[in-house]
Length: 258
Image (cartoon, rainbow, N blue to C red; front, side, top):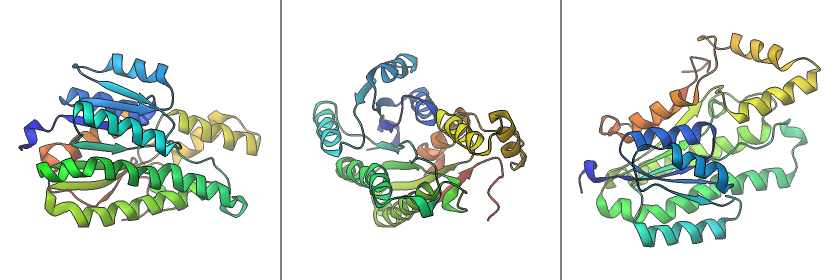
């Protein structure tokens, strides 16, 4: 099956932020998108915003892996599998790693790594049968340089990236690429929550924190979600066919590492 016929994509966390922008970008590129997140109403709004026809949504909490498997399996049986899988879930709560509980780590491990493993297991057989597929995880620049006060996220994001790198080596011969996008500070509800948390801890305004963070970025601004989505669009396009197993920062130059 040729790349031009690969037209179904699954996008996690598609009700807002980067996930929603990725759904829009993939629909613009001609993919039939299945958008997944917890709440039906914002997902319906996402679907209405997508160009093209035949899009669908699955409203479920990724933490309920049994229900997620049921819904995805049913859709694959009814509508066919996906040739593009975008693995994207909301980040763990902020806080120092030394204060995180065992349950904090277990919950994050379940909602990130184990959900990725489950979804990949469900979609991989068709990708391998058609000898073409694209898997992209949305992680964080903390994979390269841990971010202060994001202890659990730093830990789990690194595990996800290591899993994805390993997977990329195992299935590349099947015509499937696996890559990690590492967004920097991006204008999303997640960033708003982090700014609010930091401002509250320091008893300063959110604007003060935002200005300080922007100064750490060579581009001197936060990213728009659409800028992250455009890079995802490149990776799933024919132009990205030989890019495999990379951790790609999309951060305005902020990550102080090669």
